[in-house]
Image 1 (tube, rainbow, N blue to C red):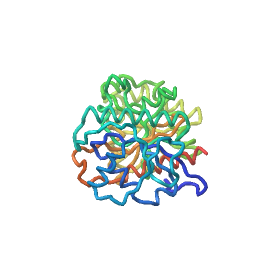
Image 2: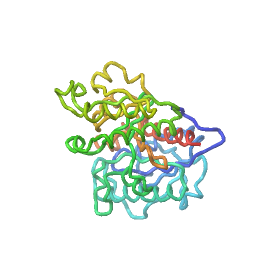
Image 3: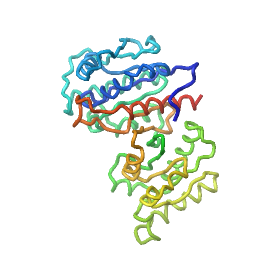
Image 4: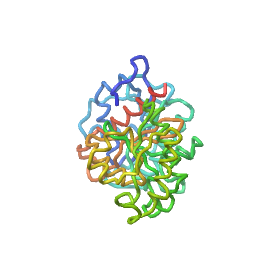
Length: 337
């Protein structure tokens, strides 16, 4: 991944404030405290200036400068812009998951997504939050990706984990393992494989991507002794994909595939469920990585970590994943152009 964009193009990226009681403000502040970031991106932060001022002072980042804007179209280029989502007094409780923080997370997402729909921002980066924070009568969606897919009338997408070392797409993501097993079928696996392959071509400039497909069961089914999904579902999909000029291989046992280093031979991996992807990704991507919602007509990324309530407001959070999410959005925007 490149840490720069075209010298002639500065993209405007909307950034939601996530859970303001977690580390979201800290990682955003630390990311853009490096003024070099503003050479290639114009950030518009959907949050509240009073909350930002609180964390700026608490974290000792008094030199951090920002500009208030009421209209994203009039945001200042090469400056950190804040779009206040509310004038209400917000109660800041670092480390606590509160109802008010949930309402503000939803409001920030909706305001930023609306500007994304209108084309006022080029991409969206969502700061960390706990997905359960969004559960309310005002937000009847599985998560932020589900909300955006509905907003852009694109029900089919793939959650990708992306770092400088590894790309993993998931057939199922934030659902129970029991449910994941019940919904996996040939049509779903093939559909996710096609979306992943198209994203690698369109968004990562890989003309003929090689994709490794993981099995579902221990030892990739062990010839049917440990499960039949590999024989009945996954292997036929891979065969069908190859006949349609998709370079898919497997199914591979997940433990051997990552422990042996075979993942290095492929442009991406397709995992069957969340933890099968997340565990090796976090161990390999030690410097942080991002979530990318592949398959949407717009670009949305997010740092691949939660609100980290245990270290909120302790000046211990690292900005690596947030910085990666911003650069990933820029790289994909450039690739699409």
